[in-house]
Amino acid sequence: MTVLHDTALTQELRSRLLKGELLTLGDFMTVALGHPIHGYYMKQDPFGAEGDFTTAPEISQIFGEMIGLWMANFWQENLGPPQRVHIVECGPGRGTLFADLLRAAKILPQFYNCISGHLVEMSPTLRQKQKDTLRPYLEDGLSITWHDSIDSLPKDAPLLIICNEFFDALPIEQFVRTPKGWAKKALTLTQDGHLDFCPLLPATAHEKNAFPPASAAANTGDLLETCFIGQKIYRQMMSRIAQQKGCCLIFDYGYTESALGDSFQALHKHQYVSVLDYVGDADLTAHVDFSSLLAAGHKENVHQYGALTMGAFLSNIGFTDRARALQAQASLEQQQQIERSSHRLLSPDQMGNLFKVIAATHADAALPAGFAPIHKIS
Ligand code: SAH
Image (cartoon, rainbow, N blue to C red; front, top):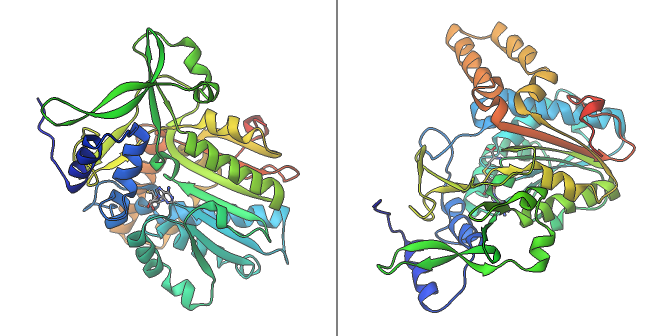
């Protein structure tokens, strides 16, 4: 049997269970990632070679730069001067993507002068890291506001929203098909006091109504994941874009057709571990079900596009041209580094196919760059 490594959070969860508290798998994920003291994102900077995982903006500066140009293009085509805009990033990590995006935006002063920045971030540690990364822009007079959730985003101008690996960090619930119907997984204690998950709670009618289409084909023993919180946040974003105008671009590790199966996973120092191991010291994620997000957005007056693979989208918006331009002014070592990082993001056998991207715009906006009319789904 695998030996699990106890942490302060394992002990806290154990004592909450012994007191009779009911904690679903989603509650477990919320605590493990967001506990004010011991939560994974709350106490540390988890990125890079020293950390647990790395992300597209940490791999290549071109990623954030291309997003900055994509937003500038959207603004020029649909809003234009003198229209002010709020650029919003949800889950900005170290602030790397936002800094790269701003650097590219600065090339177009007309656009840059209309921007204010908004970062939706729950972690005080990462907020500090973001302030450090973005200090040159803050000192330059750019207004950047931090938010606990998207609820407090301003309503007085269009929103240009970017999310990279934000939705995969939001708590999911898992349901198991039993002979008596769907049952939601909750945290339990084994006889020897270890944490475990069991399908304990019958799914409510409300939950079953929100299940994705794949649930209809389930057999006994099959597992279904839902991210109700992600769908709710996405729909709120769409409602804001419909009311205020603007767009969003969402990248994540995920799938395009609703499906059954378990994608809940934990990473600790670049190694996969059990989701119940190193609680609060391991990153927890679940693949994003893009079809459920798009279905939630369909209820608002917006146009949605995708999902495309990240590799196809980045190629469409000129990632490779930008890489060539950078290589032309770089040392041999830098040229090789640019080659490696581009390969990692674009190649189908690396992140290119695993990561997907969707976009949404207000209803009368032009086709966003990187997407063709066939990618429009509503
Ligand atoms: N976008 C960054 C980091 C992705 S990791 C990158 O690509 O490098 C997930 C980020 O989302 C972290 O900054 C984490 O603190 C933040 N986060 C996770 N759940 C959140 C929530 N519910 N509300 C706000 N921020 C959250």
